[in-house]
Image 1: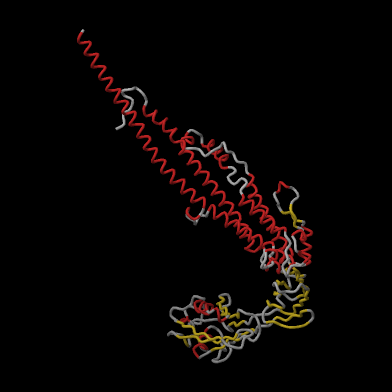
Image 2: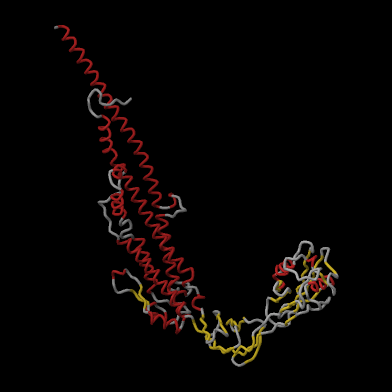
Length: 515
């Protein structure tokens, strides 16, 4: 039982609180140490994220070989011919003279589609209301049936056969067109033109020698009902406008293709209209230049942030705030205080400074790989050097003209400078060395500061945090005992004073009564 200062007149509760403040000083120090450790851990992890971003930036395409093989094309007459070049295309100029464009075969009904009363129909008219035969109302479809078509696509000799199930009572003309279109492998596009009341079937691919043939009598009757009046069983559908191959001259040699889009020597040409054009294929040096500039920018951004952490001022007078200190300060004051308290967590850090040194060494050392040109085996030879200003902390600077010349003269040599493979560090390209340095630095940081997927027991700072938590728990239990002891002592004092006061009153009463 805790007794306040009733007998003594002292504020025992405040006395105990003041005494406990002094007792809590070691606990506050441990909590501050824990906070500093957590801040330092978080800063380490932020640096690892930064390094991972740089590594991913390199991996995701900055130094992909395809970037260094990219070709650009220019057409002197894009209204006639356009082109795109693949990585294996040669840098050359080609003349294309378009004589005629490829066209798709088209089948259109010779007569309008009529109903049983001799009236033209809409696309929503059911098949059972459409007549076939030579006389209006002569015949109509009353029971379900199947269509059988045989299609030969342009440039192919093997026919594709389909069978479509038709229900005259529910399927409209548009429904049948949709069923034909649904067979994408058939290569036929169908629609009903309500402006002319005719059915149109178009081959999806251009070129000559395409055909659509009727497979049986029912199919013949059906197409006759759709206006193909001369359709006969086993023969090609009537109403055909034949497809055509594209005809053109390439560097004076006349040839043809079934499509207006075709490839020759890894250059894809797209013929657009009759006319002539010169197609120039060149190395796409701009994309290579842009990728290297992006790499340099990303590298400079990364080392600037790391150098900033290593050189950040440490304010040792600004320790993490205790709970009581926070309560006595305004929010803005807390923010400013903690900004100073968090500063310099990684000042002079040897892991980060060692990682930077490793990256710099890899960048500046000569590359000796078997495929590396002696003219381009160092960054300086392609116009990339270190800033002469020591305040830049080793940032790279680019001589654009020198870099562009190196790319134009030998893009593959520039690629090998960055990405050459090898069994030794000296044989490896600059980007590969950089990725290895990044990986080594990240491993060291994770061993010390862990990551979001690791438990505290799996890294050094985590184990230190666990140890601090254990010490804090033990000390908090100790403080409970100390506070109880203070209360027992003050309670005993209060009881003693109370007894003394009672005895004093008794004596005074005795003496007063005797007089």
